[in-house]
Image (cartoon, rainbow, N blue to C red):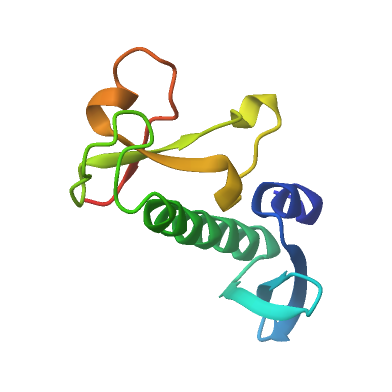
Length: 124
């Protein structure tokens, strides 16, 4: 994954720097204030970026859940832990991002009903 692709997926400015001993740190900065949103480190630049994007995605899934008050964005049923999935409103294949504004929580049943929802399991 490249830095520009990671920035496109997450909606954050991202920087990757060497931190010594052959390790790299990837940092996501939010908004105009430059506040650190997330930081992940790994043995390679690619691993650090992959970890950062995955963490941002999980964080945004949780924010989307809270934004919808724990209810399915399709049928409005209350969602149970481990029984819901995250849907990309604009599919990633069509240029959609992992940003919270493009995510919505849906029931596992709604996600599997053949509507073409993103089938990423959230929770366990």
